[in-house]
Image (cartoon, rainbow, N blue to C red; front, side, top):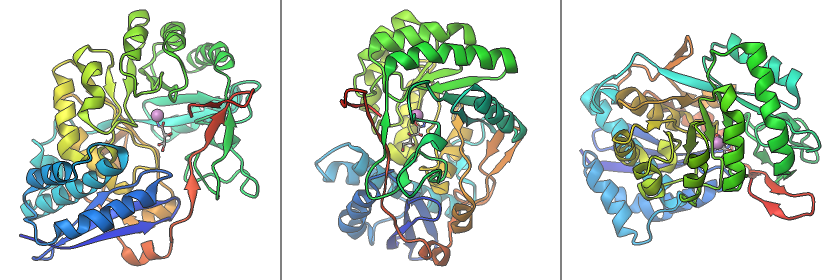
Length: 412
Ligand code: EZ4
Ligand code: CO
């Protein structure tokens, strides 16, 4: 079975998505997600200009060999653009292999280790009453675990509270629930770590006293703290029993987590911006984290993330795969198959895609009683309607960025 055709499809139903579609000489098709939020066209070029020509005529069954060939023959290793492109090829080939086998992909990864995947959603509000409404609405939607993000007094706009973000002419319009917006320039947000650290423990106190001790609560620090600030926050949040504190420091310095870990028992999750196992080497072997946040889409695909998670399993570290709406339905399906199969599954982030996205991507996952399941169609269970996709051309969109009160650019 040879790869006969490879197409890179860009579509922007509710937001931009990049999808690789492979077709074999016997007519099977496979899809892979290559969406890199705010830098989508760099991956389009990497795939279309440098990878597609290498794929034609290759054995569609040789997934590991193709992965190693793309990784090593490029010479220039790692990085989000390269690893998103390799991920798309890897997932598309797994989709094809599972279709050829007539099985849902999770069966080829070892079969189901559980009946469904615990998923968490994003509650947020500019203040505590608005946050409570959002928590209630998530509970009504069936979520059994909830991420908590709020506005901070004195700050205009803040990560995770999307409705606060405005851009001239685009006020109040959300970009499929993500802070990125369709505009020619990135939105500028403001940041003050001291105000945030003072405010946040009281928010968790309020949420626990309103909603009780049982519901797992999560929080995303979005890389904004120094190690000692993160240590202080982890300690301050201990009474509220977080499921995890995510991205407490900029993720690229693994040693920072050693300091945080020495000071707090709040579980730590990190890695949505990582792209290979090397980003986790110290974190995993020294047990400095509890959850691996990588998405299949940004970490070289199922083949590579499976290896990272098997490595993590030896240290009792679990999966917490990234699942914002900038992971396409194809990337989400890949995550669900992998999460169902591995033993060390932790939790899956799950933000619902918009209605237009669902009209472009036909999906077969189920969501019931707080659990996701990828479904039992052969392959990953997602098909792309190219006619629908063609109705929504790429639109320029950027993630926001941060400045401190004195104008200094800060981590976003
Ligand atoms: O900001 O996916 O945990 N989720 C996150 C996301 C990221 C976006 C960036 O593209 O941090 O909301
Ligand atoms: Co995050």
